[in-house]
Every structure is written in C-alpha cells, then in structure tokens.
Length: 371
Ligand SMILES: *Cc1c(COP(=O)(O)O)cnc(C)c1O
Image (cartoon, rainbow, N blue to C red):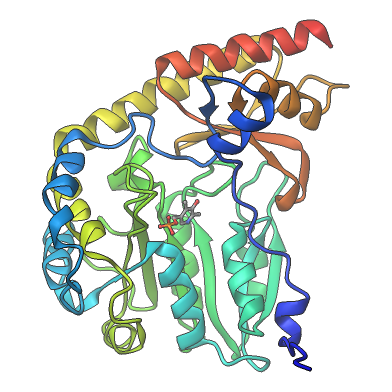
C-alpha cells in the first residue's frame, strides 16, 4: 500500500490565508450583491483597454509564450529607466519571492530576516524551503525597528525583507532610513535587502519614498513590484523585480519557462501603457483613503496612517474585531480579519470605490449602534 511521505516542512505547514471570495459569501449568506474589500484589489476593477486586449488575444492561447517575456522586460525597463539586465518577471511577485528564496538561501544553514508581523508569504515560502526565519517585532506604532532587524543579521543571512508601504499597516518608512539600513547591511556582502514595493505607487510622495526613483541604487538592494494592485491584474498574477544583475541572470535560468502566460503578458503591456487608468486608480484610492479614514475616526475607531490602498483600524474599546467582521459579512461586505498576522483585534479594509466606501461606513455605523 502506498504511504505518502511528505517532507516534514510540508506536514507542519500553515498555509497562506487568502481573503474570502465573493462567491463563497454570496452562497453562504444568499446575497445578490457582495462587496469585497479584503485583498487590496483595484478600486476601479480592470481597465477597459486591458479587457479589450485580452479578448483580442483569446485566439492565441493555444501557443506557448515567448521564453523570458522579452517585450514585457523591455517595457518595464523603459518605464523605470533601468537596464533590462536587472529585470525579472514572475507569476505574481509571489513567484519572484519564492524563487529568490530557493535561489539564494541554503536550507537549514542560512537564514532570512523579516518583521513580525509581515506579509505571510515570505515566511510560508521560507518554511516550505526549510529556511530558518528570524523576526523582529514591529514597534507599537507599526513602524520598523531598523536596528532590531539589523541585529538579527549575521554572515548566514541571505535576505532581509522590508515591505514599503507595509502590509497590513500601510506604514512607509522615510527613504533615508531604508538607505541607512542598506548601508549597514553592506557589512554582510551575502545579504540582499529585498524591498517589496507592491503598494508604493499609492504613496502620495512616491518619488521621495521609493528606492526605484533613485539614480544610484545601493548594489545590495532588490525591489519587487506587482501588476496585481494599482494595475488591476490580480487574477492574472504578474509581478516583477529589479535585482542585482547576477541574481537577475540566474533568475531567468531558474524560472519555469512559461510561468507568465500569454494573456498575462499582453495585459501587463497594455496596463503599463494605460497611464490614464492607472492615474485614475491612484486618485480614487487617495480620495477613498481620506474618506474612509475620516469616516472611521468619526465613528470612534482608531485608524493608522496609510500610504497604501488599505487601512488598518481597531474598533472603540470593548468591541471585538471578529464580531464586526461577521456582521459585515452578513451584510455582504468582506474585509480582512488579521488573526493570521497575530493581530486578533485589528481589521484591514481595502479602499473601494465611492459607493463601496459609503456602504462599508454605513454598515460599520450600524454595527456600532447595535453593539
Ligand atoms: C499583494 C501583495 C503582493 C503581490 O503579490 P502578487 O503575487 O504579485 O499578486 C506582494 N507583496 C505584498 C506585501 C502584497 O500585499
């Protein structure tokens, strides 16, 4: 008889916890309209130009894409004014993160360093690869303890993760702090500072906050971005990285040959070119972020300042996040409980369009009145 022999890392694994899907909630609560404000997706949906391009390329899906996504590499390099030889592309930044861990970190002997809590994917993929994880608690205001993070680095540390703006708080450190950390890390030549800028374009001062806008980036820094959020392509999964050349080169040798599919590549090319939709998205998010922050504060909630397309908040004293979460679900609004981030009394809501934001605030108000 066959006996499954799973690697110990896999048997012990707590999987990444995604936000609930609209379909799940529609069926469970038998509701026509369900609003999802749980996964930081685009407030305006998918760009009409992108939808048209996908339809136009539907007849090409019998073909394999060109290896190495050269057109998209070219477009991303031009967009950020950087050399093509530093760009990598993956099936979401998730694939980029996973593959970099497998490329750079020797299981059981090497370590990675990240904050606690942090974006769960870093630790889940590290565990799958048998990599030891060192975590430094965030400060109570959700800012990064840069000295504490640095103190966990030694000659076996291969990656230090920073998420700027951070998920789930929306906090973004000043660029000078990130550069100072990179500078100190250069004492450990084998350690890459991997900065996840998935939400950086939502930052009101992106050019002052992002390392990508620098002409001279430190040579021990890698930056990741994604088409899943501000470009509205979460369902197609395309992420990219700007990396030191040697790593970028090795990435393309190690990556699965066709992990970014034909429709995803066409969609990303158009999304990058569709500056009007992107700009509209940023504007909608900036307005919605202000409205939701003011609205929640007016209701007595504590809201953390956010540079991203979501807000971290807590309820007035005595009320429980899980009760509010359940109440909203029954009303057909999905937000995010943060148990998997070890923040059982915090909630995260994605900035929606004006109507979604209005409905969300109205139902939080109802919850507060009834409890
Ligand atoms: C959403 C998100 C990503 C993007 O993941 P994709 O695989 O590109 O969809 C990356 N990092 C963080 C912190 C995120 O929240």
